[in-house]
Length: 128
Image (tube, rainbow, N blue to C red):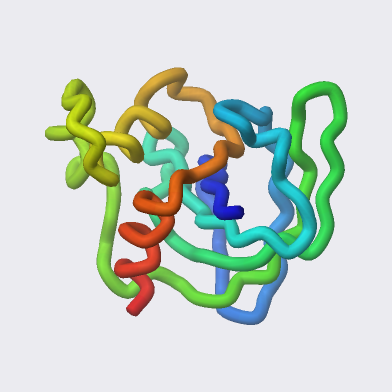
């Protein structure tokens, strides 16, 4: 499965680990070791949107929070941030942009959420 973690601003680099400690929302509790995870840094806390993708090395769910160690496999090559998905915020057309906008905008909290295959493929394009 694939997931997205919206976190506070963080530095990442390919081959380095990043620790995630965020609430689980939108099926985020189903995350496990080996899953693919995209890292989105909150622009309201100094982040810049999608920054990295990696694999979950280990994770624990404690009282609705996901605590995970992620090995970063790649950093972003094509920018994706709130300004790019904002036009899709109120659109319900099934496009990957509208699904992502709903995950990121709805409940503005930092979170870990499961992704559909369509959204995963859309996000992967930003790392090619």
